[in-house]
Length: 569
Image (tube, rainbow, N blue to C red):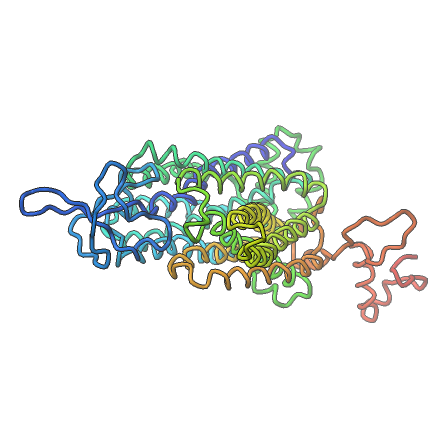
């Protein structure tokens, strides 16, 4: 029941379509909350307008400018220590005439509210992934998807009607919560619909569509002009997903894994009818077996059950740490390239910065396809993590060394050389860390059993959210502790390299259905065995046979007397 049937291919296509709108929602903060150029406009007693500088401390984040735009007079001696301005004027660089910052004058002493507004969406995503993941394992993927769509329409459209920044931030939290439910349920449904050989590419197609939303977002903002119109335009397409309640079924894999055989039987017959298959010949023996098991009670499992496992919980924790590290250190590289200081900025153009980040993410996803296809999930993750660690360590160590030599009069080095190296290492680090984060999420979805896949996905996606949360935290503190932040994540990359070697390989493997199946995902050598070489690690089938010998005291009558240590006669 993979994606081989026409009906299954249609369902996979339906999981791709919302990815474009999800991309709009995820990157809306870059436009709604962009810090514009601002200046103070005041009138004297004779009705003449004068331009004064905004306080210098309002621009520590490097996102806005305190100077008036070209063509306006530059003040000769404005007082930069006061924020007592009655009328601010803004020049928004993100294609909008008005955004949230200019709407409620979130500059000077109110600038911190912008970072809180950025927190709200990310924190909502984190809590949403954790909670909706557990709910998806208990009630199903389809109800979570549909209720998330209904509530994101309510909260998302209400965001556009916010009367103050407090209301805006609160509603953005709930919008992020509902968006997390949509992302997680679609991800799980997509994975569970695909056969082993197509899972990765089908997931990557969804990523490319989401990135298309990122690339199209500036044009959408330029067309809307106002932040409230933009917010409404982003949310309204979710109305079309209300029809998914009629056309999208529950995950058959989840129904079978949780022993809901009555619903499974109906869905199998529906698949057979939609694919125009012969009921008698194509599902012969399947329905009668289900009818025998219909009386059994459903068996649903919560993610907390993973604590009692031997291997599964370690695999999930390793991938969560990888996801956290990948998305967390990505911000360190981005600040190094775009400049946490003015002298390191390669450009002050909003669109250049935005499309540079998007282009690196696109290149990362394009590179993942052949690398993961050749090296597998574990080998690809290990390669990208090594690249991330090298870029981070070279940026932290080599650049400091270059900085010391550049101070010598005869060294021949200048600060420009250091800046060029910093930009090069940052691009490599952003490229590889993006791949680490994305691949960790996909890897976790594959090795987590179907009965707890929602909870496992929720954990790894929440870890990715914590990594992204470091960006507004650093901005809120005006980049204080930036170097220590980078050092901590660089150390995490080294730990992750060791831990990745402990993970199993899931390429071309069937998805585990229950927790015992997930426990049988064992670590394998990175390189294939040479012909005639005795493998040091047991295969899955050998491991099952070997594990069965421990229970020989209880079932000794079922084991042949001439069974060897490998469980083979």
